[in-house]
Length: 106
Image 1 (tube, one colour):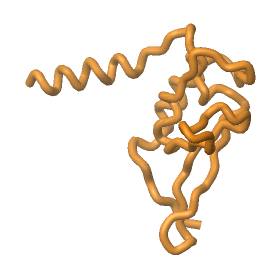
Image 2 (image 1 turned 60 degrees about the vertical axis):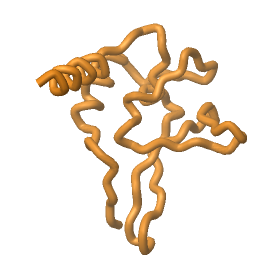
Image 3 (image 1 turned 30 degrees about the vertical axis):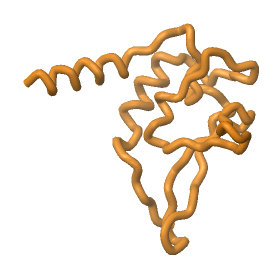
Image 4 (image 1 turned 180 degrees about the horizontal axis):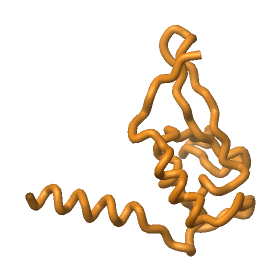
């Protein structure tokens, strides 16, 4: 019982957002890409920052799983270009995102 309550609190916290962060999903530089999987006729959906703000420690580009895009934030970003109202956008995005990483076919 306590475990499910903890999970519910964590989910509620994840649904909240603050205006002091930059939500990458609402930026024009956040791009959805396909990355091949398996035999070449399948792919995963990933997101990348077209402005180059997502980097690994050694400098190479970092890409994230599509279903996690609503969680991607930065404290500040000089390239941030919002695509619209953040609250409405994130609410709609969270409704439509897959809940896990999925393999798609061409």
